[in-house]
Length: 122
Image (cartoon, rainbow, N blue to C red; front, side, top):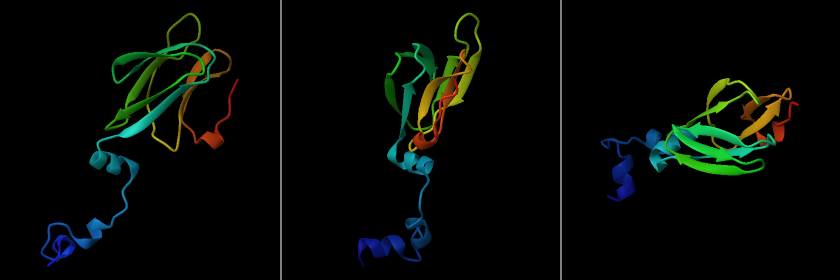
């Protein structure tokens, strides 16, 4: 009996329906060990932020790619200028992007849209 017959036989721990099931990105990440998460800065200002508790900085127009087994959380100050308004958001993996941008002239936002659907609110 071949190995594939052993894997898919009725006495096998793994049934045929499990062998050929389509996985979501998150389920595949568990098997692969993680996903990539892109974070870019289109806000025009430098941004200090924390990603899963580690401080980082993005210059205007810059981007970073991170690799995590599960979606990381980003914390940042959404108030441009004086004051502090903390925001915490989980990143999404491709095909969507995580982009820092400015809304209403004074609020830093983290958009998570398909690249083709993204518009700047300013």
